[in-house]
Image 1 (tube, rainbow, N blue to C red):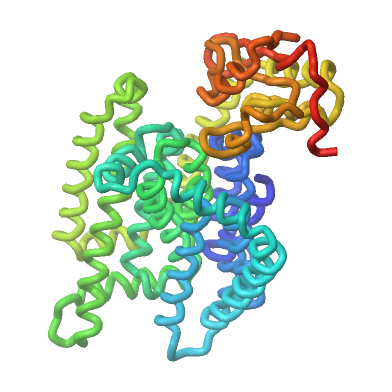
Image 2: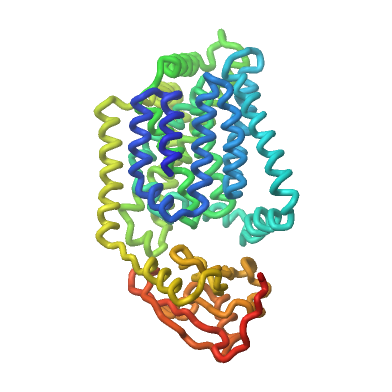
Length: 490
């Protein structure tokens, strides 16, 4: 997480200057969502860090092409940290293709960055294939295809529409950083209006957001951890509106002039077609991002309905207002270009966005500080006092309570994670599971294991923190009267 903050500032400094870098650093360093998920130490944090490093290095490569190699390596490391980073691989490929098409007739540091980035991608991918994928193909294919793709329950139009409608509603990530989402959305639409003349890192930031949203629509928008990867991208886009360099201002002027001349006979056919494409693209992007902005705002208004999973009213109103905005952008194209392409906050407004957003996050940290418990830490240490290091313990909860001890947890999921031999693990003498709010709360699979050993006995129970109430976990011995466990992994 700390590396991501520093890398974001490093990249923003190259794209939009010192003010943007400082604002972006403060916003990411105080982001409640980003810090808390980094604190949880899940793979999304490491994946997102590599994405931020890749974006920042690509931003730097546009002036010093050698940094493109780091960008390419970081993209590969992001994907091989977690396959959910596939969206960013696609975003980088789209951006490199765009940069090549735009600069195919010139020789500039920006075009040189394409070569170094491709070199980094190629070398890193080859190394990972040789030393990781090919030697462990069965495990790699299972985790990255069977687990990631085939286990997805639905690939239907209804599922895609449901996932799309859920994006700003199921979790409060966008609501908590609403001002950032608002400014980032306006900045993204503005970058689309001047797509060809935009800084390559600006284009990549827009693709980071849009392609990532597509991945969630196709795969899963109901899991909060999948939104962590958007936080630095939204902050990068919003921060680009906090300060811009002269080169960006010149690009804005070109975009505004081009829109004003759109359709005039003096312009070439290619320029007219470019203006039409930009008009449609900007209206579409404005509509999509407006749904995030409006939906996350209305989520706060109708929070009780949202928590009760009644999304219908919020979705209808948000979709209708977003469609109206998209139509307005298309209809009054020339006016919108001049407003969107030059998205830049005055200093006072920039301070306001940073102070209000960071203040909200700090208030959330304060509330968490007053409510947090150390029950899970204490339970984990208690298990470590009861069992010697290296003891095999069955259950998903064993995995969750393994941080403060030296047990060896056997995670059991539905159809994966030691599922096939879950009833035959005589080498694992113990089970960790919930007894409150109910036995086997973490999932029905653990009940199969419990039923397999009718002579089980509870060795100890611990208070744990899982739901708003105080919960209980139990350390259970499968066969207290023998036989001794087999040493399968001796």
